[in-house]
Amino acid sequence: MKKIVFALTAFCSISLCLAQTSGQMALNSSGGGGAMSGAASQINYLLGPVSERGSKTGEGEFGIQGSAYVSEKFIPAKLFYGEDFEGNIYYRYNAYNEEIEIKTINFPGADIRTINRDKKISVKPNGGNPIVFKTFIDKKQLTQNGYLTLLREGKYSLYKRVDVKYTQGQKAQNSFIPAIPARFTQYEEYYLAVDGVSRLDELELNNRKLLKLVPAEKRESLKLHLKENKIKIKDEYSLYQALEYLNKK
Image 1: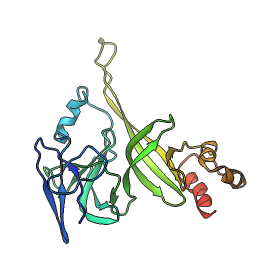
Image 2: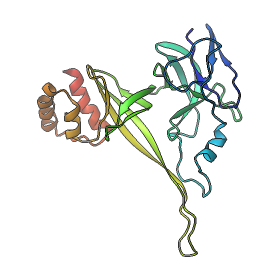
Image 3: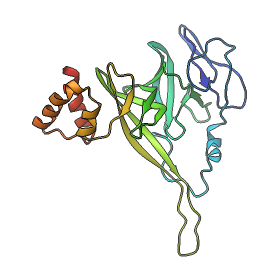
Image 4: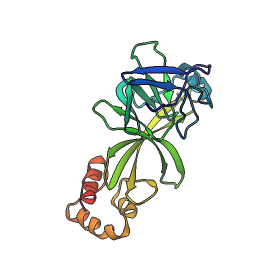
């Protein structure tokens, strides 16, 4: 059974084990990259309990609006290392910290840990799409690492990212100008992977941006298809329509 590396949420360097029907999975922590195997895996960094993370970012003084999480609830999911099923978990995604938090037992007070940022690890919500750690290039041409949800897989694969921005609150300047609460704001981004292209690029929602990411020899036929079918890319559904055509070519 392959080992999966986790970041512990307590200030100690211990290894915990998740029992499985065919073996056990070591729970350690690592700063990202390749998975470490063996009980003696080096722990590169430790995280404090979830309740302490707000103080680390200077949050909370004015009552934060919005959420750092895509969902506050822990959702049942399956954990994979490559093609290997490693166990059942409960997870929630902290999009602000770019961390997947997990519990092995879903009850209040249960230990919360974070999954190591390893590109071979995937989390598949029950009945949902897999979440994977990827390197991608945003619309500003900046290379980033983060978690993406695979929406469509094929010669042209589509991913979605939920990004969260934090805006610092401001105290009331006087009795006429009220305080401005701190705020988390969520944004959705889409990324396109093309077979034979060794990069994952952000896809902005318009026809011209999609045509730019498609190989040159496919552009004219796609442009004609979009025009004839009156497809204007402005949401996930219209993206699916365009990618369905491309994946059939």
